[in-house]
Length: 272
Image (cartoon, rainbow, N blue to C red; front, side, top):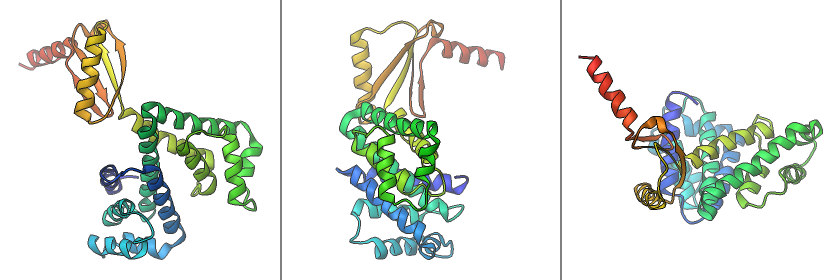
């Protein structure tokens, strides 16, 4: 995605996060179902991306088509996507596909924290590696005469029979609806989405010297409170920092190291 679609995707993600609810795995299934409807119905897709219609009108179409068929949380996410502007009509369905994967990631994290995300990533990677290593598997998964059920069963075997509900859903999904890609390449896209979600749950901490257990616990508590969820700390020691801490959570960076302060001071002095 590019341009206006990138900004619209961010809005969809914000609505998803605000409406994730108590059953994000089910929400993921609902959003995937909406993607299928959009992919199969060009008229609906064009209607929901028609710039001559108002945002309210496009949202109203969603209520008419999907109301009573999916949850209120799913309706809100779909309406957010339909109300937004997209560079091309395919981006609408792509944004909901990404939202579905993110909902699966929320589910995995809710069930088992950062390790839950790691488990789903590993299950997808097992599938990808198996497919890439077996030309016969690639052929079987793209065989037009094979049923979706047969492809999904094969995909689960190639994925090492995933134990997580989220891994199972996503692997079945890439086999059933690769949407113009190959199953393995779509699985790679799903991995990238989940890794970004994982990075938002890990605080990467750089420190000039080792922290005590008390300091680590205080840091973990403060960061978790600030972000509203339990964060996993990934701590590395870098003596070149001289003192202080550098903390990164997703795209957020907090740099209180002596090295950075000295660099800022030197920059200020040289600009005088």
